[in-house]
Length: 87
Image (cartoon, rainbow, N blue to C red; front, side, top):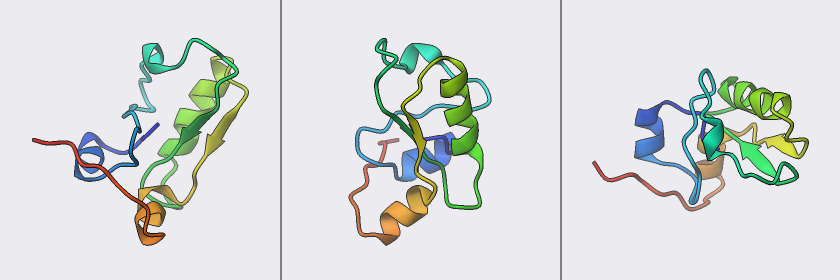
């Protein structure tokens, strides 16, 4: 789950990522299997939005919840592929 602003998500996000506002998460986007692995990320190690999103998932009963702390900046720096959302 991408917890960046919609603008950052549109510019570049990890392939298959789903945008989720961590302040008002849409739990219908979560898998029905609560044992599913969920990974949350935001902009970089200074950004705490991914931690907010992960806490919401944990509070909702998803125990296999993780944070990719390097965020989209770290992903790009590592040379990994990104997707953009067409305008």
